[in-house]
Image 1: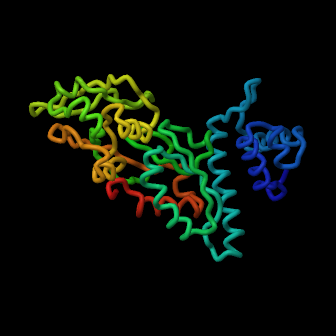
Image 2: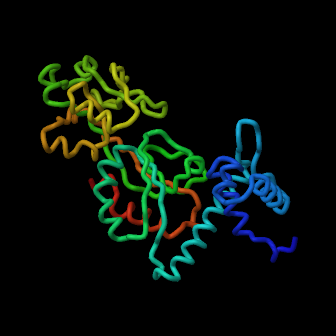
Length: 302
């Protein structure tokens, strides 16, 4: 088939639908085609590209490395086409949906208060926001931007810094009235220390004792999957928690929580980043969100 006769954007749309819908039949319904027509189109695409894009098995579809790369470029190309068409009639105003994945703590304390400003600035943009402290695969979860805490692993993701925050040990006044206020590492060891349940969390609290760094294992009776739930348990007086400063600063000012062991705080910082796929090939809607987060959503400004 001659290059000019190939509807490459149409092929991309069907290919992307297959991945997003998780199968040929679902994609066929979305594209108003037959499953056999979708299958043949994907086969023709692979033949033309001389590369296997999708591995088919009884357990479903799985992207090959070549398919993964093609999918990333395809969604960018289709997004650019859509925005070019809309921009011609809407004065280049960013439009479309952005899928955001973030921890509940960042979503509640940083992102949510900024949403009215962002949505007013960009009325053509809609947002889908999911909260989890678990690291998700952006491609598999169809996420445009994810906010992640801690060191970044080497990957194909691009990152923009959102600052860094201290960790603070906190407890509720009623818990401290009942269990006492720890002032040394030995006293802290006697307290209920709430921790995180997910595997990438630190299994110990880093402290300074006698001028030396030491790690105190987190051995409380309760572990949770996200920082916001941990904060709420601390507020309820269940135990002590070591949390990002931006999540508890308002509680400390209001007297709902008390900062503890500050003389033993090593001042170590936890970095936050907005990560995304696509590098420079970003739809305008994603680019303006990233710029907005860097400008207004820094954790060290909370």
